[in-house]
Amino acid sequence: MDSSSPLPIVGIDVRKVTLAVCYHVNDQVKHLEVRNSKAGFQQLVKVCGAHCRFVMEATGTYNLALAYYLHEQGGQVAVLNPLVIKRFIQMHLSKGKSDRKDAQWLLRYGQQQAVKPWKPDESVLVECRQLEQVTEQLLKQKTMVSNALEALQRQPIVSKLALKRLQQTLKALTQQVEVVEAELLALLEQRFASEMTLLCSIPGIGRKTAGMLLLFTGGFTRLDNYRQLIAMAGLSPREHTSGTSIRGKVRITKMGGGLIRGKLFMCSFSAKKMNAACQALFDRLVARGKNKKLALIAVCNKLLKQAFAIVKSGVPYQADFSSKLTLTP
View 1 (tube, one colour):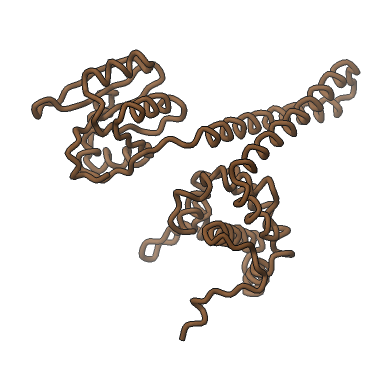
View 2 (view 1 turned 90 degrees about the horizontal axis):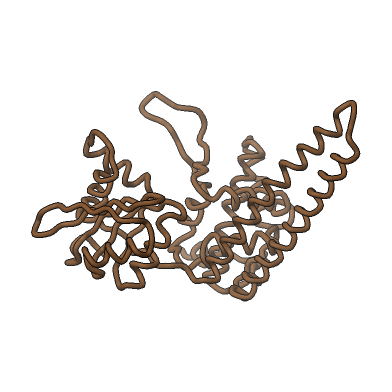
């Protein structure tokens, strides 16, 4: 989809309860406000038509039902990173903010910029991401109960009943986490059987990390190169220098992918011992005087490069593998 598309543009500012819509009629800007519900979606399509390019921001769960509905009606949907629109508005020195203005800026962005078409994920991936969210919430509750249990045990007087209840709750949460994680892995192994086998062939990557990588990337289907994967995981280096001004050390961006970064960092400890390429990289960086944590981050990047190459090529990990590109004169 590009900016030269003849489809009319519709900007939609999504809120929890309402949708602020901006569109053109005979070169005149029009505004519409409807409910963020199926009835509101139907009213939107009735006024603007289905065959439009609908531009909206990603707002968590609030925009998903709308995006699915418009896609099913044959519309072209663009779901943008809110930061992109924020910078676009700042670039034009806009003053003031309202839902109507935001919808109009989305309309202008769709008219002036090339936008990537949004496509709904497979139902199995949607289900897996919901299970992942449940797991994350259960782990947070488990940490809270574990901290409360530790605090209780440090008190001079401990209620046996309170201690028992907290221990029971912690045990129940632990069991629930194990069950949900097993269900999630089963779904992923069923959908990505060959990819799971390929990823698990990499020393340092286990079943859980392989499953999280496949869920995080959607099976590596929407990635063109490993740099995109590293950027998605927030492991790209970020430098702040300008002339003689240097703001601290070069650090990773940490933008998005917090869960997968944590998993990869834990995997890096075993990868630097078991994975030949990771071990060589780690030892080389440490020998040059680099911090060990920085070297482990580099190992995480190496694991992502290996994962991308192995899934895309369909060839399992080979310890003695060398790229043909290095053999060319």
